[in-house]
Length: 293
Image (tube, rainbow, N blue to C red; front, side, top):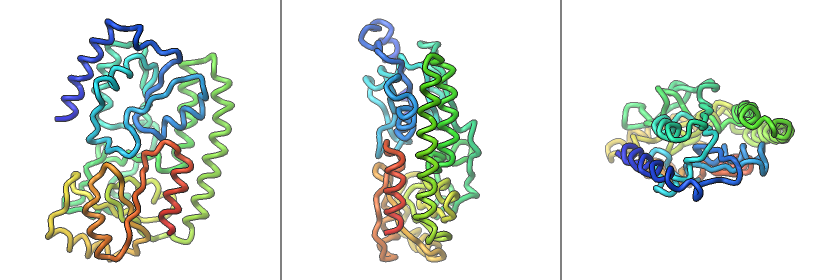
């Protein structure tokens, strides 16, 4: 199992870290985030006061990603880890915390109303199981600017408690983030207004919150990361034809074959998007424009 191997690598690296503290000492406090969009938020809120590191790179399948020993070692001095609820986070955090008791976690999913599989339609040969959830919940909550705004405030408050000397700066910067996220939401509403009720055909179910927010339908074609069998394609195609599909969206690092085969039969051109991209606001606008093309 990749996670078990990762955990063993982590323990070895952390043990090594204890003998070479000067190599890993940061000039600024280190904050970890699981995915790049939260690195963007923390950098906007903290400016140059903190060093921010995303564990998962952009355009990567976080279910399959395995950090290198050097990447694991760089986590050892962190003061905070902003987490999204992925299973690997708990094990890694425990190992890190044993070596670095100062490390704190901010479990964003505990402060978010999570969607369930009932909130989206999954076109899958696996009887509706998408293979990405926290106890059956959808963890792609950053795809809603409104959720991101509430989480940005939570991050601001958490950073202020850990680094009280910079609290005023964090809150001042948050006001700019708040303005920008509110503007983003309005822009997305205006862009997507003509397409309410239409569907997005996706290789991976990353758009549940996005579709919920802007009154669209998420149709995800996924079977635990595996290609749909030939006999499944016709069934998937028949189900897809029940909806008016606005766009077909694929993701780098994920298995896109099922969505690509269905889009070809429907005469649609797939568009590759990256929900994990760092530049959150510009990326969300880019995704919206891909949908409207």
